[in-house]
Length: 113
Image 1 (cartoon, rainbow, N blue to C red):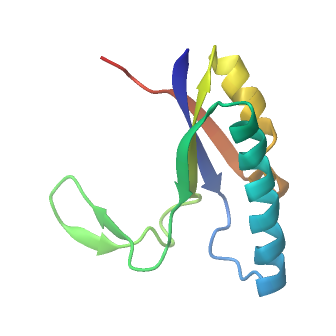
Image 2 (image 1 turned 90 degrees about the vertical axis):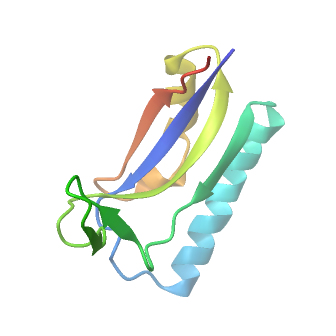
């Protein structure tokens, strides 16, 4: 069995969300993660904060970000155990992140040595 990372990309991550909407989304996300845990296929995962984010460029300059210059922003990730990329993609289909128009989940196998 391999490990896959499900990378959450938010198209409009800077949009204002009410505390009630955020609470509802967090509850849905926890239910989704718990469904993967129940199958013994959850490895790890977390959300990523946007406050105090930095981008280090190829010329070693550091800017605040990612803001404005990107169409989409990484919002977090989950690592799952799966038999194939197709099975991992089936897990990804269940995340409430996909309720946001334009949001995506990238599925990538994790390299093991």
